[in-house]
Structure formats: C-alpha cells, structure tokens
Amino acid sequence: MSTTKKQVKGFTLIELIVVMAIFGIILASAMALIQPSSKVMQNSQNMENGSAVVSNIANYIENEISSVEYLSVINSAPSSDDSTTRANYVEEYIKSYYEGALKSGSEIGGSLSYATGDIHVLTIDNNDNGKITRYTYKDVSFNPSNFNIGTPEVETLNKAYYDEYIFKIKSGLYEDDADFAGAPEDYNELLQNISSKNTQFTIKAIKKYHCPNCGADVEHDFNVSACPSCGRRISGRGGSFLYNASMSLVNIYNRSTAGVANRYYVVSDEYDETEDAVKQKIVDITSTKCVRNGTKHTTDNNGTPADDSDDTFVTLNGRSYGSVMLGTKVYYSAGDESGYTFIYSFGSEIDTN
Image (cartoon, rainbow, N blue to C red; front, side):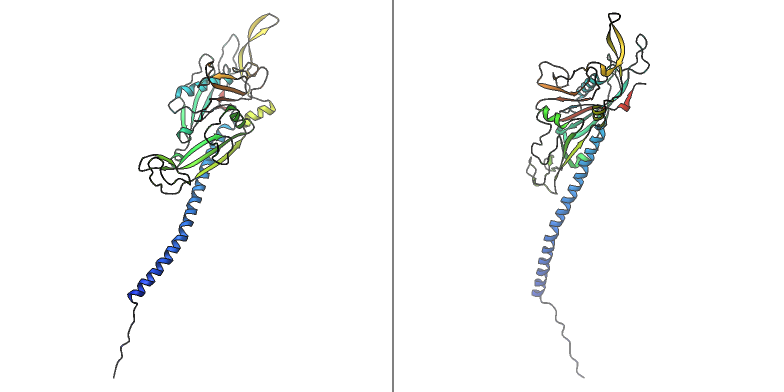
C-alpha cells in the first residue's frame, strides 16, 4: 500500500514583509484620522473647562458686589502686603458714607454710641495672574475720632484656578484681544463701564504652561508653541477664553429709582432761628454734606486729597444736601492698568442697635 505526503505550503518571507507593510500603511492611516479627532476633543475639553472657570469667577464677582449698599471702585490693586493702602481706602469709604452714624438710642447731651459694620475690600490684581482676594474688616467703628480699622480676614478665590490659568480682567465688554490691556485708559471709560444700572466687565482666561526648563509661567494660547523665555517647545494644548458679564448694582439702582435708602443718623450742627444760635441735632445722614460734595478732586494714590497729584477723583452719586445717597464712586489713577479694588458694604452687616 502506497502513501502520499500532503505538502503544506507557508508564506514566503517576501509575502510576510509585504503583508506587514500593508498593515503598517493601514495603521498609519488610522492614526492620522484619530489624532486630529483627539486634538479636537482635547481642545473642546479645554474650552469647556476654561469656560466653566471664567463663569465661576464672573458669578463670584457678581455675588459679591451686585447687592452692596455702597460701592467705591479704584482702577488699581495694592499688593497683598500693602495693608496701609487698603486701610486708607477703608477710611475714605467710611468718611464718604458712614462717618458719625449713630446707634439707636443715642441722645444729644446724653450717651452717644456709634454704629459699627463690616467693610469689604475686593482686589483684582492683573499683575499677579488676575488673582482675586477679599479682605473683610470686621466691626469697624463709625466714630469720627477712631474708626478702629483692625487686621482683616483674608480669602483668596479658589487657588486651584491659578494653577492652570492666567486671568486678566477689564471693565467693559470685549469680543477679542483688541485693547484688552487691563484697566480702562481714562476715567470716562471707567465711568461708562461701572454704573448702578449696568456694570460691565470681561474676564479672559489663558491656559498656563509652567516651563520645566526655565521655570517661567507662560501664557499658552492656541498660537503659542514655545516658551518665550527659553525657547523650549511647549507640549499639550493651550487656549484662551473670553467671558463678558453685565449686571446691575441692585440696591444702588433701586435707590436711584425709588429714592429709598437705609436710614443712618448723625450729630449735626444746625442753626436755630428762634434762639439765633448753632445747636447740635440728630439728623438723617442724607441731609448732611458729602465729604466730596459731588465734585472732582485731585487725590494721591490712596484716594485722599492732594493738590500736587495727577490722579482724578470722580463722584457719580454721593452724599449731598437733601438727597438720598446713591452710593457709587470711582477713583481713577492715570495710566494705571494693574487691576481693580472694590470697597463695599452690605446693609445687613451694619449694626445700629
């Protein structure tokens, strides 16, 4: 009986090389299709994250200042260790709105007890990645002889934001980077952008890249591919995001339309016709003269009067004879684009009892 062997034929080396080459071409084509999709997804994720962050910051600012009783705005931000300037801002604010305010039960010729309250200072420092810090001065006295401005409680907005982004904040609404340099160029622009009815500001968030070669924090925009300090190639995807916000200063605007304000009372020298003499009376604070009286003044960098200064002080609506305090003031330092300082208070935090 004869047997036959079945021959098994395999792939030749050349055939295997050809097949592997074909697989390589297919794989490269697939990767070429996947990579752009991955970049689009990453860019989309960056946009979503950046939009959420700037939205949170806008909400924080709005929640802080939209319901204030009075507000002063300065187009500069003192450094974190400049406690003297901040204290001067608080003092000027009290002089404008609360100086001499009494607690209920105070009597001429008897016991005078002065009201107290919390004064807040919110700084936006564009020179420090747009850092937002709130300083709360607790239980400040409105006694004209001693405001008792102590050490504030300090709160910095979510520090994690600044690990990934660099922020720039400017009053006004902007659609792109044009003229987005920091604070407004003149006080007229600042006045237009900060009002009781329509206060406007824009937040720009730029993705941050910390260069491992030189240690610089780089603004990693979509178009930036290398560290400007050392030239090292930047990895990962960047991006920048603009957010425009517009809000009403609710309580201040309501006073401008309805003419209703919290009532504070002070001791005032009043002329008594029947006795032909000046006598002290307790009167509504809105019937006394504003420290600034609604006029322009020159001020030093602390917002206090100085005849030899180039700075300008502008009152939108302040204390004046016989009128309700609307309570929006702007201090402008010429050429300063470092950021903003908001000084404000809430009626619920003023103790007159």
